[in-house]
Image (tube, helix red, strand yellow):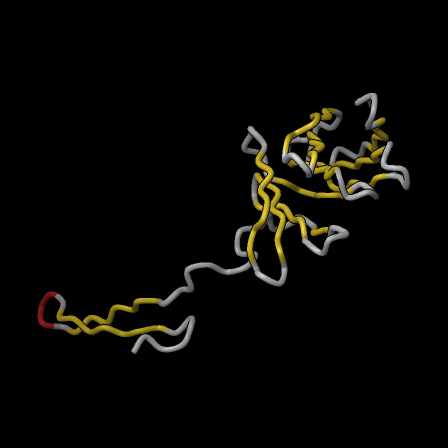
Amino acid sequence: DEGAEGATRNRCAQGRGGSMVKAYLRYEPHTAFGVIAAPGCNAVVHPDGTVFTGALESVVRWHVRRGAATQTLRAPTGAEVSVVALDPGGTVLAAGYVDGRVRLWDLASGEERVVLSGHRRAVTSLAFDSTGLALASGSADTDAVVWDVVAEVG
């Protein structure tokens, strides 16, 4: 009997010199909803009820009822995701990274649309305007940049 989830199972064995040694084998669930996550990243809710959050160097879209990842947006660099934001229409996701970059993702295709480079340190905040045509980003370098999403400049 392995017991309940998270329980510990004991096994005794004889060690050197005849002393008894107790080994603990820990029972772990195979998967756990939300285990892989960037510790300082926020989460945003899409209009369809799914949730986006940073998962180390990727952004993961979670189906909350099923507890399953339905989409993964993976940047080619190893920088950790620090903040995420959705445009008002729910079609574009902005992800800020600890390397100071902001990536815009097309959610329908899962493709990276553009990389915005304007910060020297981790991006700490992101917000779209009500039209989705401008994106404001703040950073640990104390700079704030307002990006024109269409022209891809800030």
